[in-house]
Amino acid sequence: MESLGERLPKRGILGSLKALAAPTRGGRWGQLAVVGATAAAFLLVGTLVSDRLPFGRHEGPLLLGAAPAAATKSVASQSSAENGVLFILPALNARVVSVVGSFSEWEPVPLSDDDGDGVWTTQIPLPPGRYEYAFIIDGRWWGQDPSADEYVRSFGEYSSVRYVGGGGDGA
Amino acid sequence: MRRCRPMALVVALACVAALGIAAAAVTLDDFGRVLAAIPIVNEARAMAAFELGLKSSCCGFPVNETYRLLERLAAVSGSAADKEAIVLAITQAIEQGIPVDSLLNKAFEGLARAVPLAPLGQLLELRLQLLLESRDLFYSRGIFRASPGAAVAAGAMALPPSQFDGLLSNFADALGDYHESGRSPFEAQQIYDEVHERLTQLSGTVLTASDVDLVFSRIELADLTQVVLAALR
Image (cartoon, rainbow over all chains, first blue to last red; front, side):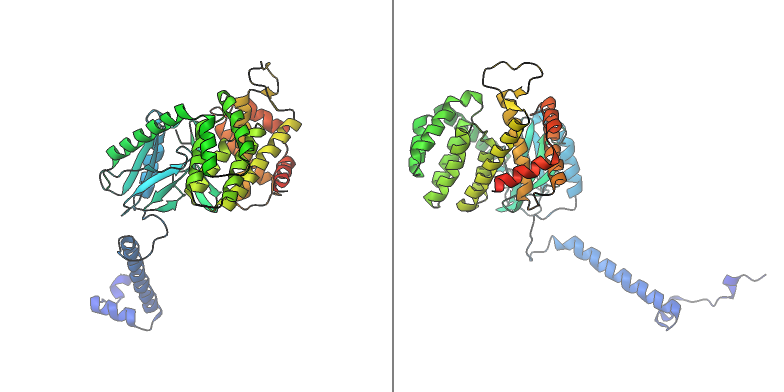
């Protein structure tokens, strides 16, 4: 018995492309698929390179793709309070990063990026309590630390909050 | 630039050393000098308050932090009247026996953010009113601050000063944060949730769990709206 597949006309690559361009229902779906895939590819490439372009105005720090991993690392590190609370911020292309907060009378404490991977860190010994803080990246305040326990608005700007030694993950 | 950890350590050690020197040195004369540098009209009143603060430094008054705030205030540019409003908010808190830590923190933050001095003074005044109204609420519900040195019987509602101050400070601070986020004082449940969250997070560390339970067993939703509205008057 002859199967259905054997009864269909056999197409080469050129035939398939012609079918896409043909004004049939199947051809229109194929065209949509090609256009959609192209758009998705451009979107993906654009997203990947946007942070590395030398122009454009960024409202916040240039977050690396590894930001969630860094935040996880931060939370994990905070559990060992003996060495202090770890403040960590992925900020690609930043030149100077510091943290200010209620623990330092809002005076800057510098973060360092020893290996140059764009992840800036510092460890500050803090007794149990609630601490409000913000990062300063090349002179710009950034009050929404992804690893904060909560956020508050002060003077119309956000500050991050971390609880150390209690129910929060600060320690 | 990125390899700044040794430099950061040196800077941190220098700051600690500087703070240590300042801690040993602050006297009433120092307060007098820094007030003269601002300068303020009600200097005598402020000096009396700082003298009171120095006498009660054993009981938690942050002498050095207060002095450093005045130093920073003297160093920034702005009208003397606006600076005086900030000093008077601190002065009034000391006079009233209210903990000043949260006021100092907000003042330091405002100066660091280069907030204009006039709105900073207004914000401190509101925070002060929230502290006073919160204390009145505590008192009206039978939660008191014990006199320094007095024995506190088990089960009594007169809390040791440091515990009472910590509780009051965080309670009023949570109300202040809520208000400054721009939300309505009539959303009592939201206010309650935020205050509850704050005190619960600190319960067992900087606050005593039984004190937190005591507050929530005696305070109702509507009380919080009343406190915020009274402070705004």
